[in-house]
Image (cartoon, rainbow, N blue to C red; front, side, top):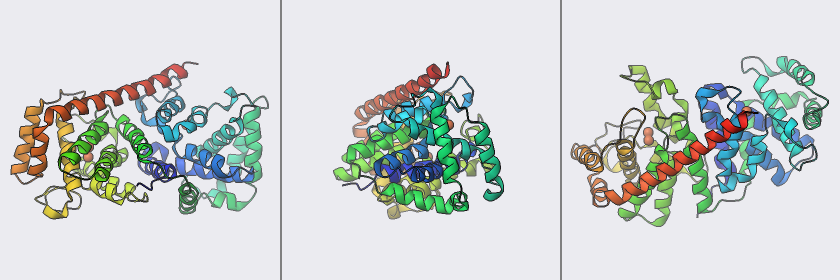
Length: 412
Ligand SMILES: [Fe+2]
Ligand SMILES: [Fe+2]
Ligand SMILES: [Fe+2]
């Protein structure tokens, strides 16, 4: 049975977005820490507090979708809310995320009103703190800004501002925002979450895959395709059920390191220069680094980290060869290559399965990938490809629905 919790997973995703997305440097971690400190002052504990911290840890996930349109007609909060509402273990975060920029739209007596206020104030403060200035030199100015922004008619926000002023009286409040201290405290408080069942884990991974894929239209729905192909290949290769669903999870997450590669490189037409190639090649190492932080996911982290290795030792980033590459990682590699070949991208149509298979056979005979796994894929390719297409179509539908939620709600 998995022992993965929602908190563990969200902590790592938030940290990955912060470390790898230039506009979000430390943003989720700082917002989550501020929320946690204010909630403590307000006497909020247990499930309610963890819900707030979890929402804070991913509240700007919607910015990954439609990043080309960061303007007033695109509501990233609505997009983030639509995304999490498709995922059962996270659906209860949706209301907090949806309103994190608009507490004034909330009925002050609604059950979530105060929590939304706290999240929006934490976001406001986190947004104004500069990483290059010592924290105690800027805390006064940020509080002044916060107080001048208070609108007495906005009761929800005013109550949260009062809470922030009270919590931030001590220097320790500000000093605790130090990245090391914040990550330790958040990791601990989020770890005490109920353990997810298998469906819960997969639905969470599917959402993270959607977030990764949404970063670029070039890779839209790629992870969902890799996930179903990897799981099917796992069964065909005789792996036990437990390994097969973990392979599906690895498929959703294998490219999480791409969050750190700029779209200018991912979408560059024509040849990449040396530096750009190195940046792209770094993504599988980063996938390993991010995922190996999550308790009970070291196997998934390893397979994801090895998905660009080659049996002849000429892959990257660990330059492993032959038997040092576990079967699950070989399967993930083939699922990734196959999906990349047959999926349609904005700049080219996907290949026919027969063409893709013959390229994989050549790669196998050149000593790059596992010939036995490629052969298994060949026996059932039409069936597997149908499932892949369905999974990718479904994910594109989710992505479109989330984007549309942003357009619609951004209109007013
Ligand atoms: Fe936001
Ligand atoms: Fe990759
Ligand atoms: Fe990939």
